[in-house]
Image (cartoon, rainbow, N blue to C red):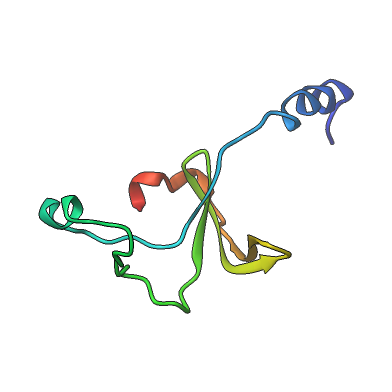
Length: 93
């Protein structure tokens, strides 16, 4: 059971802001194609439309989810939490 001091210490960090990133997909392109990108160019990603997106917190993969629309904004519906998020990082992208 947690002591009162541990609970107070946790309260201090619960309001700390972290960077949350959702990765829709990725691909590898030759630099020749990158420099030729123009408005209207389409980049095909390796992921399929039905594949889940990755949810990263400060570069650590913590969950997978589905893209949803909330009013006029995008959101993510969590479908799976990563059991050991401490072992995954943005370098796994």
